Length: 252
Image (cartoon, rainbow, N blue to C red; front, top):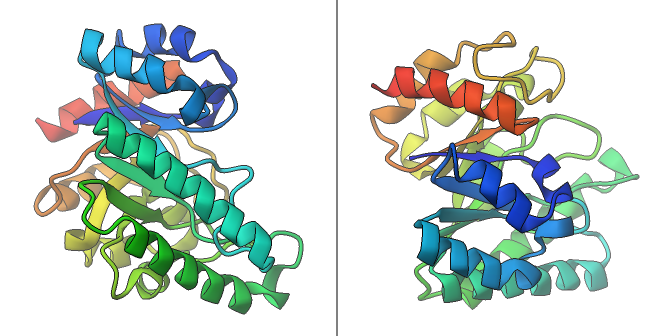
């Protein structure tokens, strides 16, 4: 199924954004922060599922959570917040939540080793606390940067190793990192796919046919082993609809 997601949507009231999205998409990966804080919109999401047959996935908050924080207190706070979101997803039968690995904000390479180890600890805790749930959890690859970790599939798999947590393949992030081929070799481990394009230098979230990455053969390679949803990560709804039309043609 083709869905859409964008952090920009979280600036708009949930009901207002829902009315726009449901005219074009039956699946929305909600970025659960700002106006779309999941505990606040839970009733609205449940109503949309029951009344419009709307399907949802969740993207955990981007701005304030850091499961690899060098501060143990902040790391535990991030875990607690994620577990709250996971509990709501389980209650609403939302099948998948995507989360970011830890980030080395402000200190970069000086703390990346600590951030990666803290991320591994957090992943093990989350996997243990959610054991037996029907919900799938996917850890997303990041674009390269002084702050980022898990930019290639090997690093991502090393963090989730030995747990039930899978991976989210973000094509745009992988294009900037030069790591697309590695993900295609691990297609059976992928639980979620984010689709967007860029110039190979910056994470621009362009429509699928823009930018320097040829996404059509990537989607073709994925479709031979991947049977999950394709989430178009767009800068805005108009560009998301444009990308949907292109992707529908590729998947025919």
